[in-house]
Image (cartoon, rainbow, N blue to C red; front, side):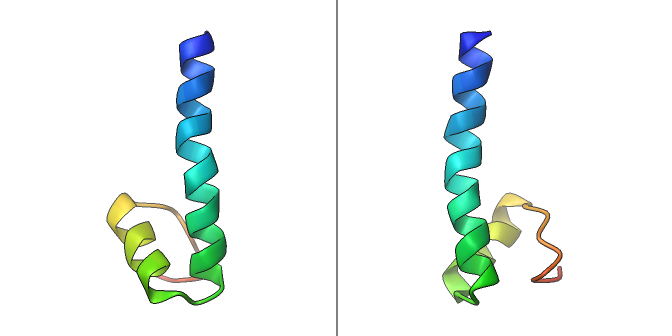
Length: 45
């Protein structure tokens, strides 16, 4: 259980940062979100 929890944190915490920067319009974050398959309706696919 602990391993699953840490895996979620290590994925979700950086992904949240990418989402925030993509929403702010940073091209590098938008590209990263698309490459990683993040579901971000605000940037389109």
